[in-house]
Length: 334
Length: 251
Ligand SMILES: Nc1ncnc2c1ncn2[C@@H]1O[C@H](COP(=O)(O)OP(=O)(O)OP(=O)(O)O)[C@@H](O)[C@H]1O
Ligand SMILES: [Mg+2]
Ligand SMILES: [Zn+2]
Ligand SMILES: [Zn+2]
Ligand SMILES: [Zn+2]
Ligand SMILES: [Zn+2]
Image (tube, rainbow over all chains, first blue to last red; front, side):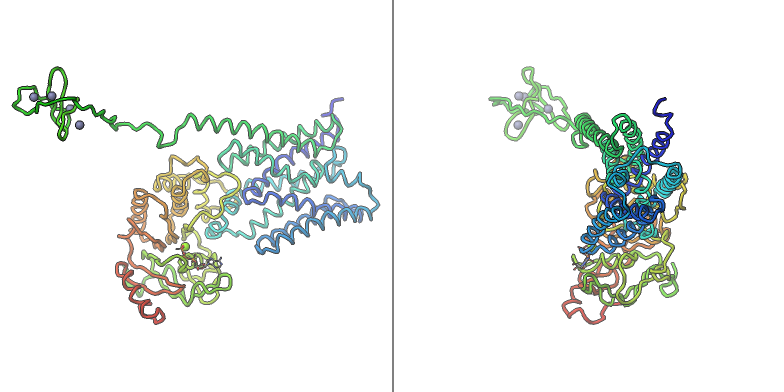
């Protein structure tokens, strides 16, 4: 029996595929807004959500998504206020999320092993119900991320201009925050809550090494995310380690490769394609070398007997096989 | 052209005061701009020109008074496809590269439906806007890799692409070379001939100078001159030597 025939592996791979697509998709918008660490914060808050689920006996995926959305909304509201104290408020929220989660899981009588499957992902714990939830949420995230692409791009690129085009900027910002929260929950079983942010950011940073446009960065990042997730899950099965770790290590390795290749490509392009002002200018004559005829006592004139030859804007005189032209008080060799 | 009294107003500013960080940056500004007018907003650095522009497009709230666009108070204004805006500079470029074409296409969002791809006519409009600012050959290049003047030309294209009725420009040609300014002025002239209203902040009007119908001079958040363009510099000068408090040239 190969690993692709194992039912839990099939589920893990499907969840991995969707996670690999949706995390970089939303991550592209977060990176563009320079909110790379937002996913990390939401992941911390979601730990409390998972713990609430375990404590109350309801599905951790559902409690996680509710708490994550509430947390993401709070983060977005604090950010939109733009107050200096907002930074501290976010830190309180993040650490409160982790500490509260660990405390509640202790109260629920669950050990570190259970918590670990949520923090770093787990191949064997994706139940069929989990899978339906993951598929539904991931598809929703992708539809929004692609369908509202132009609007979300404009808001992330230049928020003020987006407002003047009549976009509902606050609403779209909230959409991004909620999508990030949903993605965190989607990715929870595959990469885990502590590493989900890496899967949102690293593929985007990798893609950027090779791309110039927003759209190609988006597409390439999703491709990298899928490859990293699927390869990471297979490696995780073979090496018997948490999938979150293998996925992120693979993604980081991809970044190192792309950064090296990107540097080489840019260096070569820089060498091949000159800057505009380095291009040879066409039609501009070479500077005329200025050679003075040494010791030239004779003064040419139209009647001196030397043949006169038109040369552009002046006249040269043929003199012992040389061409001589008047220049100030002396004669030049032409 | 319709007479001044009956012509529709593109911009109406009444007794506008704006508070930034606890300071009144604009104080009691009143202004009416008819449709089809080309107005230059002048004044020294920090006199409140950008603040006026940003309040007119709804980016800053009014502490007192009101701004109307095409007769509708700005907080309730929804026809943003009628307005094109060039900010003073590209605010905080994003963390992901974006091409010239992508940035210019975001100028069409006001007339674009959700979940809809670009129509052929919109793609053509993008190409035309890029031609106007002579950036068509750089369409696939990342905006962050352009020079300051080239980036400014991209912002101009982004505002022109939707062919708006009212152009609100905050130093659109700052850092743009003279040849490109001339092309830009020609493009504006063609639109003005079709009835476009232009409100433009500038320290150096350059080739746009000939198009200006009227200039407004701000000084410390007040309008100190409002009238024909060429007298503006001298009049404003005479005016503030009187103290700058009396209504004088206010319309
Ligand atoms: N965010 C802010 N908070 C507090 N004060 C501000 C803020 N932005 C601008 N100001 C102040 O408002 C005044 C007007 O600024 P504004 O940007 O409108 O000037 P401006 O006329 O556009 O100048 P410039 O020619 O340099 O563009 C300045 O004195 C500035 O210090
Ligand atoms: Mg300004
Ligand atoms: Zn001779
Ligand atoms: Zn000679
Ligand atoms: Zn000589
Ligand atoms: Zn000669």
